[in-house]
Image (tube, rainbow, N blue to C red; front, side, top):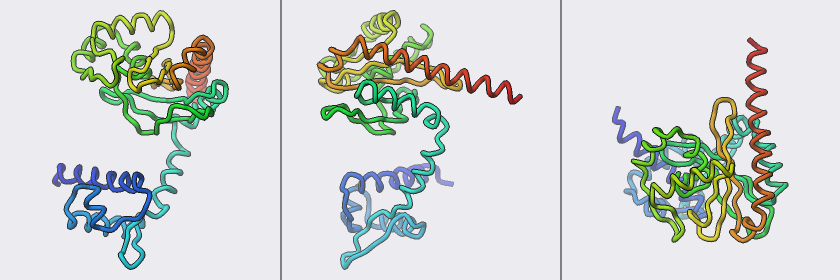
Length: 259
């Protein structure tokens, strides 16, 4: 088995669907090859395989290509049985409804933060993100919260290999400054970014252990509105953490009872 070729094909398949997501319109094979920066011959084989599996169809005189709803239907079924979102979803929705701000659920993935769920805020002007987005540990609120859970030796080892990239003028790029910020955040109870990952956006995060998994939950929105509501939002986040931790405790008790 050629592992590198398999990985490249998998990546190209995902890029194909992302290209349609960006374009939001059918594409010819030539247009698709340009979007993927791949040879037409490779794209032709990929399209033929996905069409045979029912994921793509061609239509019109120019034989334009477009995805069927098969991927959507499979993804919807997968999402409905997500072992984490099924239990924490209502708590995230309640937090969004109470604050009106966008709520983010994330976990650590390698040296980044993977968003598992994004519950869009109700305000006209709000922060937007997508499930599956990967954010830096050092400049995102959830990333800071997850770093704040580490023991000193693990934190030092993690920081030693982090690329402390500057995303805005306010990004903390000094490892010693970040360690000092994490210490203040532990004392405060919430981990905050002030325009450090996205300019003019403030986010506040906490962590909770649910069924043995350390998760981060954040509120994010425009800097001015978040700052004026910081005290109330802190109480809302801490209440959500209590609810999430109770959820994890209930699951553990149910497991013991079953045994």
